[in-house]
Picture 1 (cartoon, helix red, strand yellow):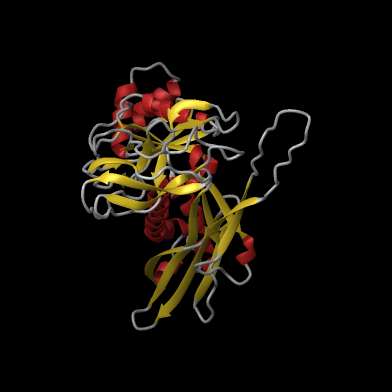
Picture 2 (cartoon, one colour):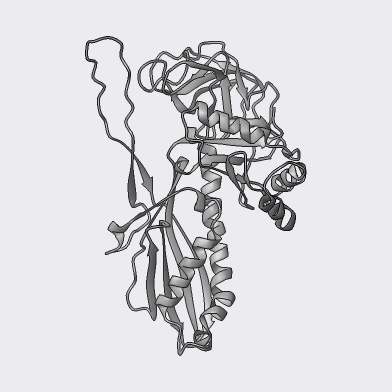
Length: 413
């Protein structure tokens, strides 16, 4: 049954429904919609503030020691606008909703959803400072060992482990399904693996395959990198490095993970050493100059005392620096960065774009439950008797709790 004409509100609502269904990584994270922008519309550069819980220090004895109650918040900047352009004729507007969805909405929104997913994944994995496995471009896990190791990493970092999601590369899913097909599990899970070739629930996590799993190319560091200057300041977020051979452009890449000799992570609650080297992530691609780097930016910032204590000691002069936990350089290994994470590790912020005047169609659809908002704007092309339209989404990504996530790369160690 055909409609007399498809309106802008019908088209944009159908588009929003389809977008919710098509998202993969994005669907598994914290999504925040800010209705303050609904009146006038948001623009690139607008900001959503997300509150984080305070941290406190535990003190022995009867004497009161008050920790400052500081409301911590992080700014999520709406810095990315993506759109899909479409054109359809006046006749197309008389199609049934189902026909119009199949012909125009689904392919357009599929492209838009993949763009949002990839933008998030490609930036978010680089903020995660923990990993397990041996980086490899072709060796994929065929057991759950790497993912259970990642779960342990999250638990040791104080993250929740009762509702985890694993986003994995298509090749990783194929390897896992083949490797686990003989294991005992529910008949429904076996049926799904056999009929659809997908993982489903396993090892306390919901597995999802995504073509948007990013691959990481480590920086081409050469030499025997070591700490040049002993750190002595709480909250230090850079280290000086020497022992590098020569001047190397992009010596360390954003997203590289480093460990420092004998600098161990501590339990965030008890402040007791976990016995595992603390992993730090490089936050910006940095070049070496004449065998050294004066200031290499890292996360997390280093604390040896107080409520933010995260390591057993400061890095000191001469401590070996290992890239991805090994003396071997991984500069030529382009490895998929599978992620195991809790929902609140990452956040997508979204707001209503402004509706321009003087258009044939201009409508927005927002869904506070899913945290999504999209806009449809159409103008009539009288020469070609068609409607030139665009679907837009304005969004920003933020890694809220890197400790709630862990990368799983290559085969488990």
